[in-house]
Length: 568
Image 1 (cartoon, one colour):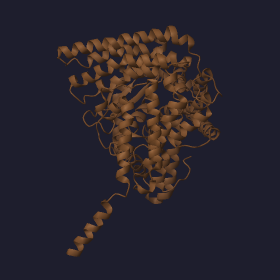
Image 2 (cartoon, helix red, strand yellow):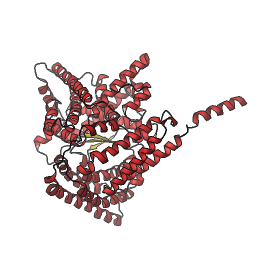
Image 3 (cartoon, rainbow, N blue to C red):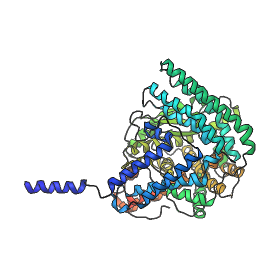
Image 4 (cartoon, rainbow, N blue to C red):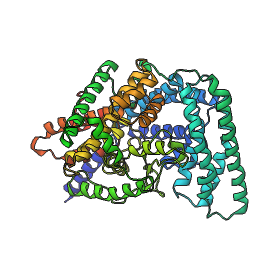
């Protein structure tokens, strides 16, 4: 028995001992994230690191300069770190951090949203308080103290906005003005309502003072934007071809030349337009596709039934995923469905708000849907509800919940490293969610309902339009007005939605990542199918994909295929 014991101990020692340098890398990662969340405390709260809850972002010029120097030092440390000393599982994490740092430096030094976007400040304040009130990770009185601390710093932040905003694009200032009433209403209504259980009078008095201070400061900021900043908002929102290419590389690890990327986008747009025409003809060949879509768009629930309709859909989607072996669900708990927060309503119709992997107490996930505002005209309400027709309700629920964002979030909880849990790529997360919209119908959801397929294709065309409008607007080939028209004419969207989407594209230039990521995943699936041969199964592919966190598809290709073959 003695030799066996010796051999077992030897085998265990070899498998358990980390390679030289792994511990040092893990320490470097910890130091990096401590610095990162110190400068981005709102993200720290969302990530579950609550030591940052009483801090607020600081955009003083000296602080920005300090942040740039800190990122440059960390970049040098990670670049000097020998990749060969890391385990195969965590070696790609080094690249992931390096690209993430380069992306931040690009934003701070070249794109400079802190100098251009007034909404970054006002909605940023609301966004910093929202994760504290939305999840019960601590007793209400403790969370209220954190809200007070952030509210007390809000006036400083808005003062920095006044100092930093030099010549913003007019559309940025207009969006900030559009968002501000919702931000103010958030502090008037939602924040106090979240702490009705608090009985400490001294604490409540302190809160009422800080909360009123934020309301007053936002009101003054709104006046500043309208009277002072808007008349001199003559800047250019376009980031230019070079910055666009670098952002695509650093955020998504995609180095495809922009002209080639645009060619790919147009090719997929034309394919989806043809699919839409063919599907519409199957519904009624005597009528043109836009009339069929108009009928589909009018098939929507009333505003007061919208949330309930989504609730009814989610259970059926979850059952289909399980029964048809689409992907393993780590939990059967449904997300909480609610109205979108005020600071998100101007630029989004639906979204998922999931706790990050280091949030260990308040683990609720929220599926947000933007309802019509009470002060909208009947015509505007109808236009908004047309984007929630029966087909797009299904497509949205698939994208956001099963098996889209929410399902991926459940998997990320068990991602293989700290880096994989905290850093990812939109081409992965949004690409995955968009990919599932088509995949679910391909696998039989809806039993071949042509109207559901038409809704899915219309959503795909929306993402195609984002792809092309983002590239062409930011490289000077398309004006804002032409962008709106493109969403309507080429993307088959309503003008109301086209306006929202084009506004978004001015400040989210690379929102091509939905279609780009979907195409990357489809190529990976086909390449994996060829490599596995008869051993391929869809649930295995999906599980293998989601098990790696949400890094750029290039990293997942290396893991699943063992090579650096092209992502597109």
